[in-house]
Image (tube, rainbow, N blue to C red; front, side, top):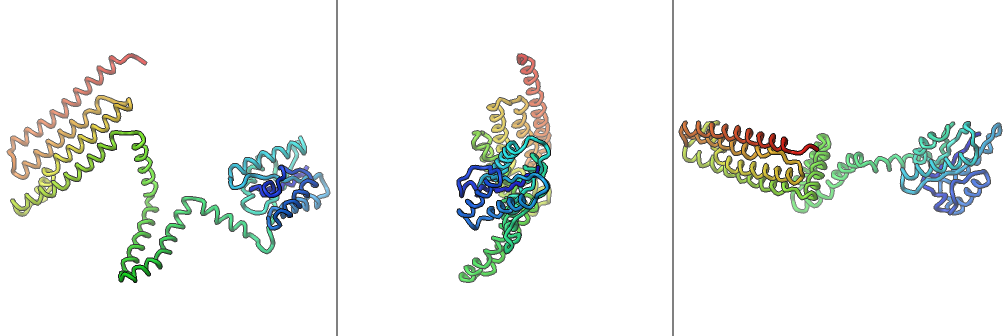
Length: 360
């Protein structure tokens, strides 16, 4: 048996006529076509229904049945599922045999998107598209443009640069009024260049990921958020202190070599950087403890920060002739011992805790 299947994906038939779907049989489909044409003569689905009737009448050498199935307005996935269910209903009502074949009749590319759903249920001999002759391919063009603009990736790629370009003229008028036209073209060109560069490097994905992580930190109530802000402030203060230390050294000592410049920057900033490192690491340790994932070796971090800071301070002070070689040796030895002792101590504590922990 051959089934002529008229597809109305957005359910114009049901919405405009109030008829129940699927519609099965020549008389029922003809009644539906007349009802839809009466309700909305401009609806292209009227042509689909009449084309289905025409195909059924033109085939005389085998049994042919005609039916109309509909989807859901405005929801592509739900519409496809609804069409699939109605096709199942049609197949169950016309024949129980396995040799049913179908000709799908649609009014454009949008309705044809459901063809794979129909193919999964019945063998499709062909797809017949019905459009008004004066408007050939108009709906297909509209549907293609709509699909492009519905895609966030494509929409951002096309519309954002176009919007920036369209802003040039009104911004140029405003800039000319204030006597600075060159600034507008430079700013617009810069925005367009930054956008294209960001799209090329995938900056928007990294930014979205960072925003998602920040949002999760806010809602999770993590101490790391506060300690990170404090650490950032301490790093900023340390940078300023390092620059001031360099200016003081240049004033008192005159021209400095590259190693002395680096030492002056470090000696001014190192204590603030150390405070930032300790604050950040303690926040991380606190979060791990609250989350039940604390390990004793996490406490090594603040001790390592202190040890490294002591070594850097001793070396910088020595290169600036502020301390003796004995002081440098003491800081190097003290930093090394502090790191080793903390590592061994927390390793021993962790091993004993694991040994005393009852088996799961």
